[in-house]
Image (cartoon, rainbow, N blue to C red; front, top):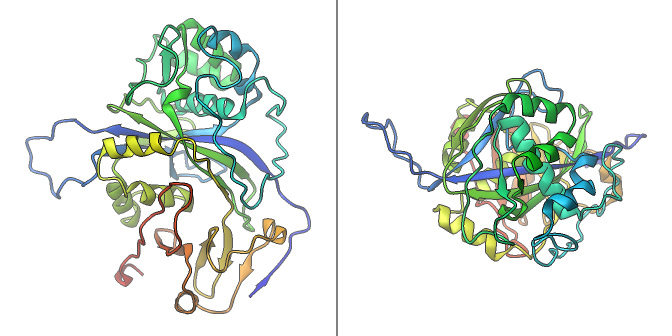
Length: 375
């Protein structure tokens, strides 16, 4: 195997994404379904990015975006008072920080003030809630008069306010307007409904011009809220179960980037909405690893190596390197035993191979290998 070092390192921008999982109680139509309903009792919100976007054009993604200095402004302290405030904001003890390669990355972030008044776990949650509003018109807010701390069960999104389009335009123009919207509605971002889920760093690739250090949160809602795409950054959306999402990807109806595909397959472990919610509550304080995939180019494809895989090297050289081999993917797979990898056959055909044990009470996807007839 070989690699080629790029002379000038790229940097990651800090970002937050929210996986919205909703219980599904909508009645079926009178027409018999063409295929059996999915086993999972919940649906995920996927937004279709505009084909004109510079990063992942046309992809289906979870709502999210870049952390802004406004997301950690001291002005939020007055809105959260008197029930919530430093140091924990009612979130409980801070989750244990798990060292993972690389930790911490040099984000080089010019748009986020790292000395802001809010703890990171609060600021990233505000960012995720703000982005859900900007992109999908979904307001994950709770009245300021609500009892302190997390709600006992899955909640509901707030009804959109009059003048939704005008408010969203203001927030998109200047994220500081999101705090003003919350104050206008006498609400706070429902940071307590967001559960730590995962964290991904964009891997190095020759054609990549943007790289992100993204915190993923999971939020369980009792029912799907109305979605209002902004028709600029987002041009469509769908609510679908993990199995339906996988099928749509394989049939080329949608495209998912490897981390999103991995997370969808991870969520396929849960047969019911209540199981998923209980799982999130049970592992809330276990902390997370931040994963940087390392890309291995094979003679006929590509492999995203993840921590724990026998070929994964925790070496700073691979912050800006591609591994490569003249062997075919099938040869690489036959030679190995300890896997944590996503095998990319083509744009719409990924396999996931996991033989390592999951850490910190999380779950890893089950092995997901597509029939060779798809190749």
